[in-house]
Length: 298
Image (cartoon, rainbow, N blue to C red; front, side, top):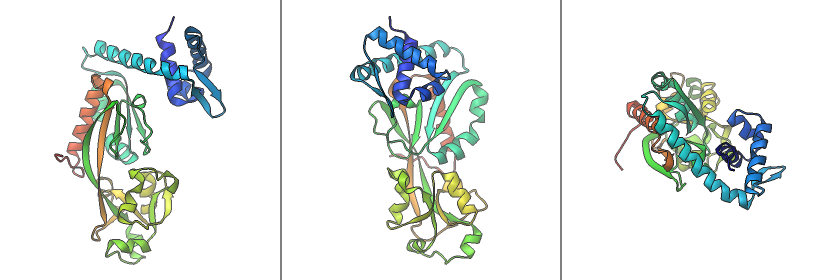
């Protein structure tokens, strides 16, 4: 007989691709995960994974079963939420994926009120700038810079924001003035590591400076800010983050800014979940209250 627990563990291994990573996420040991998979393979009389040096790869039978396992997983979450929704205080987990700037400088610093209202709800904030390969089973809500292409998600534009160029007073005092955007070619630019340049998140700099070469590279906005504060160069940063930093000065040369947007999405089968709806509403209020973000009709 099939077990819902076995299917849940199977789906997690399929998403993670490694037994140990699935075990960590499920907060069990790897032998427990292995036992669930073995029991499920016996129940369906099929091998579900090819065990390789690069991870656990789904077989054809595993791919077919994953569709049903994820559907059952979603149904169980909806049932659980409906049973708990009689209480105004939420419980369970909600997993949010956001760009590092949005998560670290807007969401987390203002999450206290939501936490106070729902002390039994565990909020997971995963800050990641690579969203192209995300599947709806990896998150409850996602804030992204590009519009998600996954079919099984509900998407809406969350807010518009601007990015500008910033440097420390010390750096600007010791380097040539920036009077036009092209002058930045003569400056040390701080940006993402080149190997990460796989979508618009990482190519924003090159929209205004096509021939730019960033000589200080890191993998997140916190690193940009630290480097700029230390006088290492000029960083391209969201204005709603950097304008409030007293150690940075904005470069006001003509065209030295970029317009971008945040999108919010959630798997369609989770829209009914109270914890997902309420977290989405809370994020919407944070955005509306942030002067550096704008909400315009499309």
